[in-house]
Length: 211
Image (cartoon, rainbow, N blue to C red; front, side, top):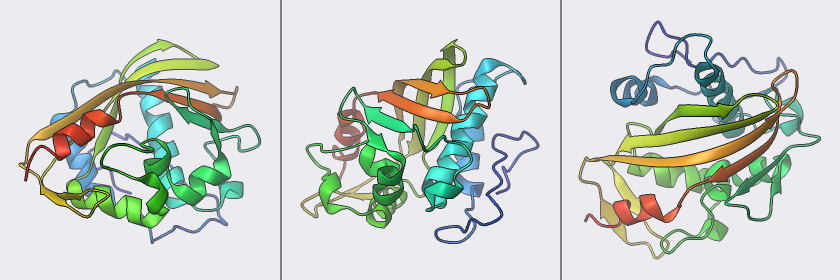
């Protein structure tokens, strides 16, 4: 998982007994997007740098290691996550359905109920072939309750397919989505809760505006 830079932005090492869902992940393209278009560069050791690496490591695990019992970034006995204050989901649900489905849900043009983990991943990788990067913008409180502002971003150069099968060709512009998160962590920085807040319709309005 080379980061494409001397700066180490994730350092996830799987459990020795873990296997990757679809082979070892390659972060070359999304790292290029991150380094080329991030809005901030955090000082080493800052809360923002610590949270950034924590969430990037979490994302590696959530996306690429299926067995929740071998997850190292989360306390699966307590883990819960929720979008915009809705009913929380547990670790196994996130592994089964995928964070793309759970952190997007039902919108006007996307139906999480018809997508599996794999088909959801395909939808967004096709729309953003250069990757959809993530950065921590600001941390408002440290552990054990970490409140932070984040940004997801990437160039819309691919094709998005809505729930009816209609395809929307990207125009190459940068899509940026900003949100908040309240993360619960223990003394070992294992995540036990993620409450994510943002407007899921913001990316959809952008993606479906261009044909």
